[in-house]
Length: 429
Image 1 (spheres, rainbow, N blue to C red):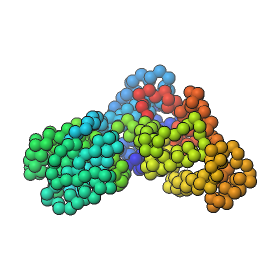
Image 2 (image 1 turned 45 degrees about the vertical axis):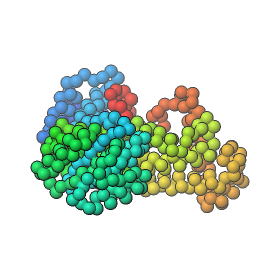
Image 3 (image 1 turned 90 degrees about the vertical axis):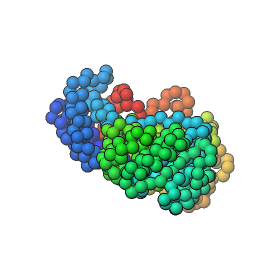
Image 4 (image 1 turned 30 degrees about the horizontal axis):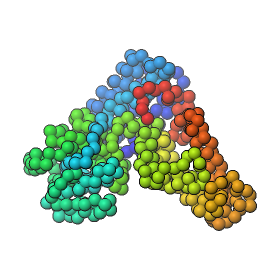
């Protein structure tokens, strides 16, 4: 969803941002393009119409914040309205005896999502028991057990203790029987949160499910957001039904469950990055690989940083978080290959060379290139990037680092040159 919808939204923004003076005609063109993009993502036509009216009204009548041009003011309004459209998240307070229940129709990804929730809790320091109460589908318990074993979590057929995540029985369609059974489980177990799992391909129809179970659930989890063009419609429909979105599923791996934050999500859609999310991922990785000694940067610590980068998830998703959303597969593939080569080069260095790269001269470069099966140019490229990082770390330690400096020319920001993005107060990236 971030791929196609985000690409089309960014194209619309860039087209508007590239214009000279902005008047009502340019604003109307932007709104029409946004309408086409959102309707193609299965957002309800009525919601799109209301959004369009608000964007026009606020753009023309609201006073721009200090420091904003008219163009930047319009973009801020678009951002605010898109945030409101895709819904609102929900806080999940963690506690050692947390109780969660998962509801959903057949094929929604309910059992897999239950396991993903278990992994998410485990990362937060809570180790839940996975409980399968799906008596109608014999394979449900086996599936949950297999997923749990991969994560070091126990699966049971009944609730024995907390913390737990209960995977309830699915149904082909919403029915009185499903509502009655779900109510019985909820009344007995009294879970802290009850999630309704809805696949993104439901589009605006997701709102009907959320509304039908609104009295039983606390929030919704939208699955398969990475594989459907209707994800925007599903998010907007749930928001319109007045049901918050707790998580979104963004891939098949157990770690591909993301706590939903409308501001961060919209920032990524528009290609403005998710720096907060990137930092959170970095913190998780740092805990796994240990603290890196930034004050004594050498090839050993540099190597650890690259290892940490590969643990932060698929390379494309890491790049999305810093705003590089339009890179093609060849480019991201080249970056993966580059990291792999760099690791080989560092492995071919002697310990003194790793600890003090400044001693590496031309003859050492030739030896390292031969030993790693790469070229002298690749070794020099690694040394150049290492020295750049060393300078950057030094500047950061002195408080002189400017976050966005050096980002000019990023493909993801093309067409936004000259935009005072830092002045857009309220846009928390």
